[in-house]
Image (cartoon, rainbow, N blue to C red; front, side, top):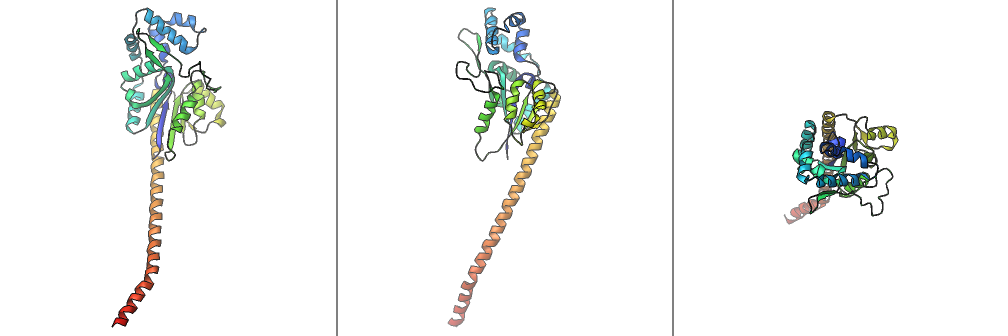
Length: 287
């Protein structure tokens, strides 16, 4: 049975909106955010927003409470719980940050469904301020992917997941995303894998314009209800295909075993005949 790995982008995919912009808007940072938007890289900009909140006396718990109010489609919640119960390996690769993602998932009872979250790291420092940093340290040599932003190549994460599987373990990927940063990991998928781009979003446009580069099957969706329906259908289809393959393989092995047993019996019978003839002759001579 193949291992099914379902990889979600987070913002505008697993959740309908953008977690960074939700916090900026809900916590009154829009003016400062717009003022600094063109002067800082995204992760540095969000770290600066957290500094501003700290200076206003807002705590990490206040930010977590804000994140808990972010809506998540009920069908998406249900399908995540369902496919986790079916044994799928669920992961997130996102350009959001660890604190935001974990708080939202935990609020909806989903955090334990995911085996790995690959995103920009964050932590609360000794002063109680939430800090946010890039996934790929910008002070180290660049990751070298021209398709991805400097702080995170999602395609490299997909390659790492694939490399972590054993030689005898087949892995089938389903990747869900919406943005330009999801194009690179989509190209890392192979035949038998599936990619689910959100309709009318940058990933959908890029896949449509570069269809010859894409080996995975493409299934677009527009809202949480469609996402849940298509995802569950794909997992059921993959499971059925793998069960058929497993059944055929077992039948083939059984057939080969029966053939080998028949051949071995025939050999034993042929080899045993002279022995039985000698025993019969010896019995006659003794009489």
